[in-house]
Image (cartoon, rainbow, N blue to C red):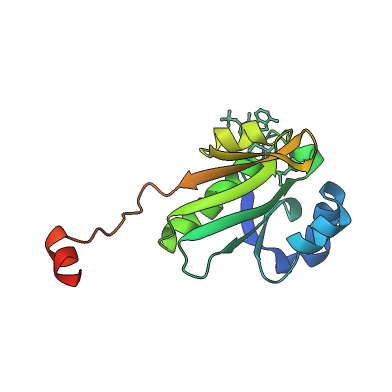
Length: 161
Ligand SMILES: CC(C)(COP(=O)(O)OP(=O)(O)OC[C@H]1O[C@@H](n2cnc3c(N)ncnc32)[C@H](O)[C@@H]1OP(=O)(O)O)[C@@H](O)C(=O)NCCC(=O)NCCS
């Protein structure tokens, strides 16, 4: 069986208990509080009425930059495309709102790094010793290919200067 056929993405508050159960199964307690906090937008991946994935994000006040804050797939469902569906959902949301980029941070030794790279994220920075000596963190970025920078024509810039 694959997850691809009946997988839908829904607001997490349609499945509050199951969403929290999945988050608490994957992350530590302080991380869970942050993932479920109301300053973020949360969505779940649902298959046959079962919550199999969770994603949370937030945007900068100017809508330009979006942070992928938390992503979790149920252990039994990993490797079936659920994480990719959730990331593609976020990308579509960012494109819809005219955002320029999604950023995320994940530990240097995280198993999720190849996943993010397969989903089109590029390594932007590595901060060595961020968590502990020898354990750094990585910042990845995905850039919206349909985003266009508005450039000021030279003549206009001169007259303003
Ligand atoms: C990371 C995580 C979200 C990936 O979700 P997933 O549903 O298993 O990933 P998918 O099946 O959608 O994989 C998408 C692609 O990434 C690849 N991939 C996924 N995990 C990978 C891994 N550990 N190593 C290498 N490639 C991986 C898949 O092969 C697939 O490639 P392809 O479609 O281009 O062939 C999931 O493993 C998870 O919840 N991990 C624990 C929590 C976590 O680490 N969260 C992220 C940090 S906050």
